[in-house]
Length: 207
Image (cartoon, rainbow, N blue to C red):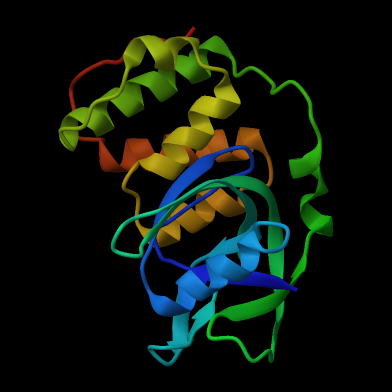
């Protein structure tokens, strides 16, 4: 069983860090229970259907481990969730807890647990990606550390941008469900191009 935190627009990917501020009583209770156990919970989005208090869940989420924890003077919890492995959301379990729990199936995403060197994208693809990212950021008046972006490993860069950029929930879900890093790279590049297609600025190639 896996406790889940339904939160639209929030994305954690394997190896990525997601800061969370917890204040709802049911999720404070969930964090208490998780911290007393293996510190693992699932982030998942919702989809149309169900009622407001219990919306339907998307088919895929990502399990993460709480790697930092602090409590504020007014009773909020500030935690960092580090992504571990994506899962297929199975049946919802009828436990007497204020938060929801599901049966998670990880077998389709076993590669998330494997350690290996991420493949490099061809120079042309990285240049196209950099140009699309620059147009997107200019269009939305956002900024990133370009020096860090140019030297970051491809996997870290793609995952951090997928998690951090203000995409719509359905777009976040597409990035989560991309089966491989290469497909997530292509999905991210396409989303950047669609949003920033009217921009004129050219980005620098990521080395």
